[in-house]
Every structure is written in C-alpha cells, then in structure tokens.
Image (cartoon, rainbow, N blue to C red; front, side, top):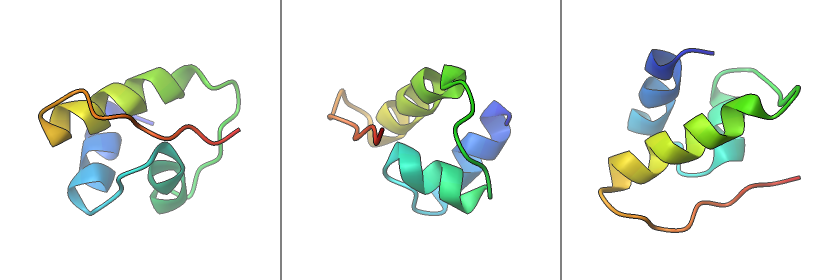
Length: 55
C-alpha cells in the first residue's frame, strides 16, 4: 500500500482508516500502515481532526 494508493482512496471519499483498507481491498496485517493512513487523512482534512481507528 503506497502513499499514492492511500491519497487516492481519501480523495475518493474514505474518511476513516477502515474505509481506506476497504477501498483498496486490503486488510490490516501488522498495522504499520495505520499511522501513515491516519496522517494522510488528517492532512487532507487540513487539520488535526480525530480519525477513527477500528481494532
């Protein structure tokens, strides 16, 4: 999963980490991507809005 993939998913409407995984047809494996996904969602929102992490 690349930054480009994540940004594309967010641009397509993914607002939660789980939405990004769903839109990319992926599932969390080791959760290393979660921090990166969260940061990209926050950047796209233009603030530090809370982002939901589903466990």
